[in-house]
Length: 126
Image (tube, rainbow, N blue to C red; front, side):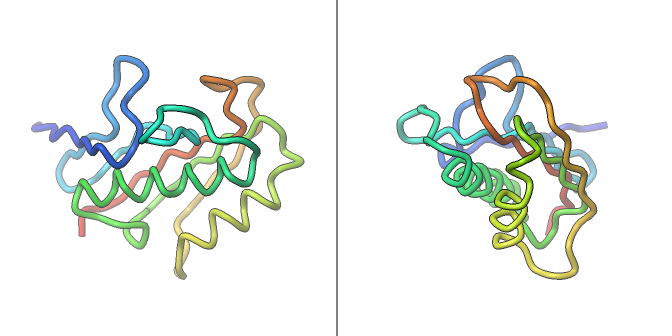
């Protein structure tokens, strides 16, 4: 098995011992993306702005891997508060087109840097 490590400066640098994404046999597995601005390394404010930044970061990582949001097979959304589901869902959907990928959304107690939303995806190389 050959792993291709994906990296782009258009998404935040990893804040731990992981890669932004790994491709194996044309399948791209992204690490969870939080709402960090890749230029400043700072978390953007508020759940709406974080959700937009997360999807921009996911998109940048996928593009670096030769894919885009239309190739997402499965997404996992982590929310600090499930009350934010509707607004995050609308923002998430605005970055996609039908047919939509499979998806899970779960509430968790804490995320890195106090993030309010995190998204990881599995996609197929275009």
